[in-house]
Amino acid sequence: MLVVDTGMPMFAALNGGLAARLQNPMLAAVCALLAAIAVVVTSWILTEAVPRLQFDASMPVWFYFGGVFVATYIPGMARAAPRCGVGNVVALVSPGQLISTTLIDRLGWFGAAQFPIRLQRIAGLVLMTAGAFLAVRR
Image (cartoon, rainbow, N blue to C red; front, side, top):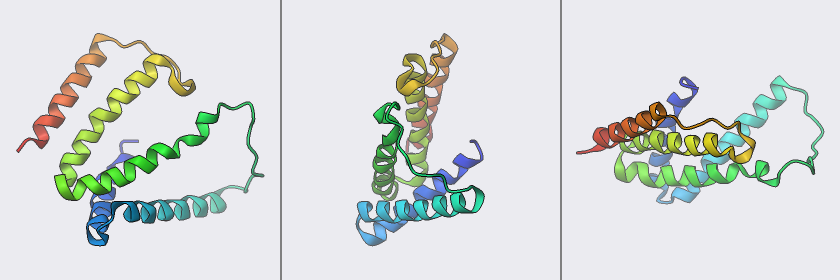
């Protein structure tokens, strides 16, 4: 994931630039999502047999709505990156994600395994958040 996540600053710069040129972060988000769908569907077709589409009625409905968070993240990034700078926006994404994952892990949201919050993790969150704010401070 460390390698995969190196693409997020590139995404922020590209999508932020697209939003600034189009003067519309929502349109830039639509373009990004369409490109993502094209890549995922092509990869899926090339690497796996296409399964029969079916929904599992026993599965909690919220599992089908992960894209809602992507749909808020992409236009948010497109709107913020040109105004605040790519580095600043991406620096603040990491502590936000770590705080969110700590809550998910602690409370077992969405069926995730539960893990206690230890002092070491709290210290890491505080240091990461402080570091992000120091990194973006002008």
